[in-house]
Amino acid sequence: MTVESITLIKPDDWHVHLRDGDMLKQVAPYTARQFGRAIIMPNLVPPVTTTAMAVDYRQRILAAAQDYPDFQPLMTAYLTDDIDDKDLINGHQQGVFTAAKLYPAGATTNSSHGVTDIKRVYPVLEAMQKQGMPLLVHGEVVGDDIDVFDREARFIDDVMQPLLKDIPELKVVFEHITTKDATEFVMSAGDNIAATITAHHLQINRNDMLVGGIKPHLYCLPVAKREQHRQALRQAATSGHKKFFLGTDTAPHAINAKESACGCAGIFTAPHAIEHYAQVFDEENALDKLEAFASINGPNFYSLPINESSISLVKKSQQVPEKFGKSDLAIVPFRAGENLAWQLKTV
Ligand code: DOR
Ligand code: ZN
Image (cartoon, rainbow, N blue to C red; front, side):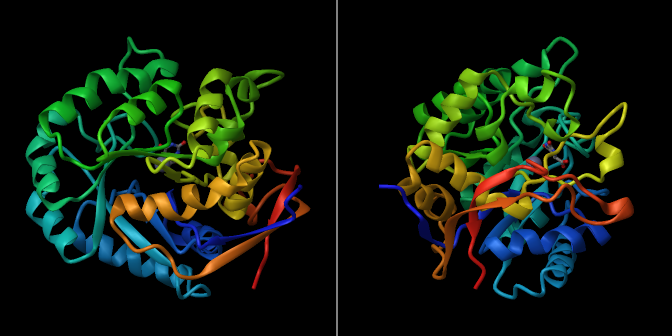
């Protein structure tokens, strides 16, 4: 039987870039209209490193999403080599910081203040372990001798394995995984290790980005890998297993920053995020697993309540606009101009 509509517990997005200023005002409503909560990435300029900065940023997000008063941004701290651990833990105890984000220095957009050697922040991570405060990792090792397609697999060997040996009870979310290696690693690790998977990594492989001309709007970090990796991600996400949950990594950049001789990394999926995921789960005959992935596994891992409201999707074709926003703020979304099979029902 073909399914024509589906109702889900309201989903959450466990990995979102909302930026700041006019861009924040433009993009926040797209996330807030679909999701109950969102984990907000702290890689602003300057990065969100203190409780006071996170309190202010949260206010700006709530103002930008005021049409959706039930939306809850969950804030994260950007770890640096010399982060103030007292402030970080206080911020967590006060309910400001839900988690802290590890960007290896140089790994991605605005990561220059990131951690140069994870051992430098071990005391902070030990304090987080005590509190049950999750560490969110951008899982890539950067180095002149490391191929960009190998960065994630190397991170597992060089950083994750030693980290879990040294700080074994730390809760870790391996963000936006892109490889079979990462799915296998997460499955074989303890219950304190989970992963987010983006809609775009479920849909594209590196050929989509590079064959027939370079597609800057499909470039992100970690970069899309070979088809066998995409297949492993699809299997992990649609399994419904408690260790995998929804995190879009929607990352808006204005058109001129993407269509450039040195284009920025990031794919903007926010406007149709849940529809992109529904398409994948439908293709895999796994719509019955979408609710676990989108609405249940995340809050369970974070020890947060599951949302009480719900959303519905109908199987009705819609076209993704060529762009969102005007002039300097215009952004090309994922699958611009293409048809999507599912549509979020607005209430
Ligand atoms: O593609 C990406 N864009 N990956 C990241 O890790 C950062 C993000 C951004 O902030 O643009
Ligand atoms: Zn991200």
